[in-house]
Structure formats: C-alpha cells, structure tokens
Image (tube, helix red, strand yellow):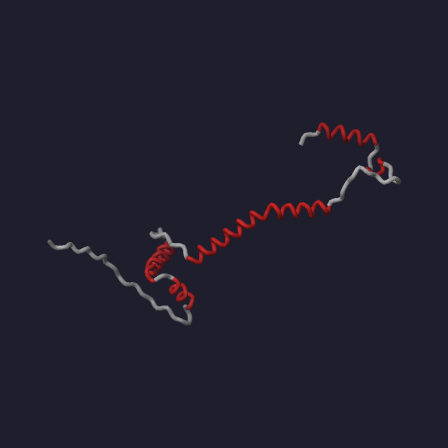
Length: 133
C-alpha cells in the first residue's frame, strides 16, 4: 500500500533588500518578530495596505500585554484612591468657604447685615417655600 503524498502548495518568493544604515528601523522591527511569524507579518501588512481583509489575527506582542497590565493596575489603583482624594478636595473647598452662623455682631443690626428689610426677608421666605426646582 503506497502512501499518498500531500500536494505542495505553489508559491513564489518575493524578496527585497534592507540596508543597515538607512533602514535600521525596519531591521529592528524584523528582528523583534519571531522567525516563524515573519512571513505572516509581511502578508498582513501588504493586505492591510491594499485595503484587503487581514486573514490572521495578529498575536499581541508581549510588550503590549505588559503595558496593558500596568495600565490596568494603574486604573484600578486610581479608582480605589478616588473616594479619598475627592473627600480631601471637598474638605479643602469647605475650608475656603466662609462659615455662616446665626451670630450677628452686637454693633450690626440684622436688617443691615443681610441688606434686607424685615418685609423683604418675609417676602423672600414665602417665595422660597413655594419655589420648585
């Protein structure tokens, strides 16, 4: 019984030169790709440039995953710290606001302190009771 040979796919070799002095950025990118993934990366770039659908999903780079992990940890930390930070900001804002108490200095009349006569104050109080926000 003879084994059936698997038919080889037809292919054409496409190559180009990359110069160490003027194409150092391309060489660095090329060297960063695993040897078994280089042809796929070139195919994906060409298809992407031609506006065609990329057939393979690009595997995320380990550096990208590490950066994503650091960013996620930073966001989690910031969200956990936010209530305390907001509380501190509100305390600072409250400290800057003038404190109003019901105590009026002895030498100032109540109507003069508020700038309103008693009739104006009563009228304002009635209007505020009926106000809807």
